[in-house]
Image (cartoon, rainbow, N blue to C red; front, side, top):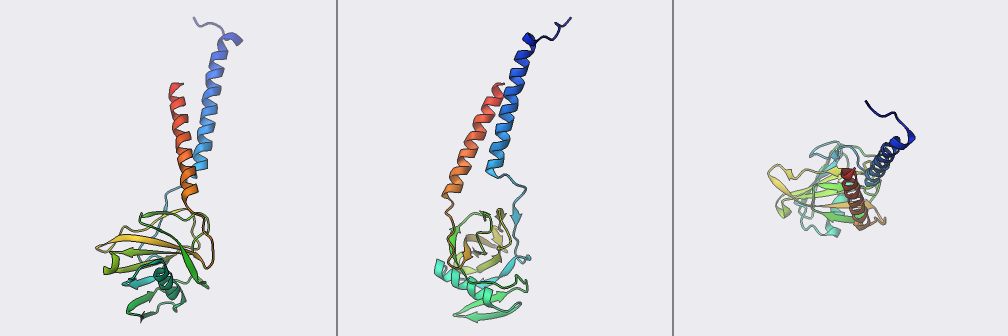
Length: 196
């Protein structure tokens, strides 16, 4: 026979339940702070965000890449042409009036955090100077996206993000620091929950 429920024998249950609820709430806040979202948006070769392609896209310094993107964005829809020994192909995808852009950030991964309306374009270079550069318009995208690791048989060499001309884009160090702190908090909460 069980003892009747009294204030005295309910207190340990209440304390444990309240502790668990507090930790679960803190864990939910930590996950929200990390900005966990649904699957990343994937950009694909020849998708509706493709601005165009530059062959060979070399040299590929920041100023060169900026020139390639600005030239592509100024071309007529569905046109092709050559300039300084490079071929430019502009898709028929219409993004409205496109302004000039400026270099913002370089990277090599296939996952890219666009933040919120910080960038206008991504130029992804495939196989160094041996193939070319795919350019996507991302002015209407935010958050985490992915780009292809290959274009045909050619591997991704790196990418460049571009923002509106003259814009100041915040560096990613503070974002990584916040992510690290959030992960540490989540790990600490998990360890405490396992003790309950």
